[in-house]
Image 1 (cartoon, one colour):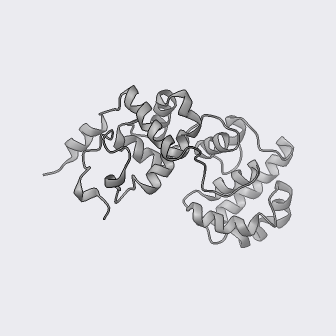
Image 2 (cartoon, helix red, strand yellow):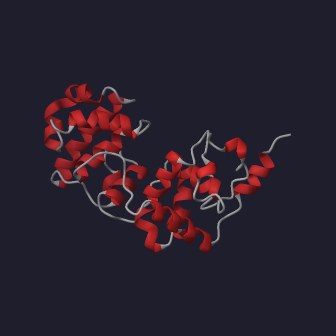
Image 3 (cartoon, rainbow, N blue to C red):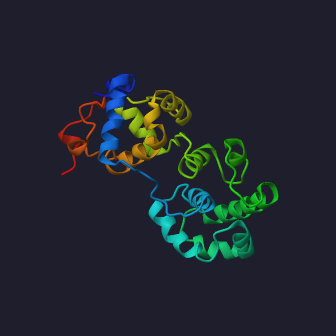
Length: 229
């Protein structure tokens, strides 16, 4: 018999305000100063790394940028490489042809419209080639300290499984999180949720046995079958 009705019922079960505060209190206690696993030193380097990270791992992106950034870490320098030259540094990353084209166009637009600086508004960021809402949210949060939340597959999974912010679309989950996350946790919530989804609440084999949120979580399949050995 299918367990679909049980899963759907669980999805509608949400954490209370007190439980949400407790959830983030525990994540903060375990990791007081969370940050991205992408390696960068400037807002521009972060922007490039996030554009490269689409459908790629942070580990893979870091391997590429460790070679790229010592040679070209400004819009001018990347433009000087040219599209073919840039590909030589990022060709280990998925979709590198499209990403190279976007980064060249992005660098040109930064120079022409923003004096070579990374803009600090969502509208200007999303107008850049290869930059969507998720990328803009990452840059606004990580580079500029804005309380934005970039909902990737990890955050989408955690928000739905736990009952923190159930939603059928990425935007629905983002909107709920922005509304529900207490202000004191808003700046770091993005990183806590990504890291929790990446290392504990994993897609195929969640480590429920060692999850600090186990008693709060609404996911119905917590049990020996989902525990890591």
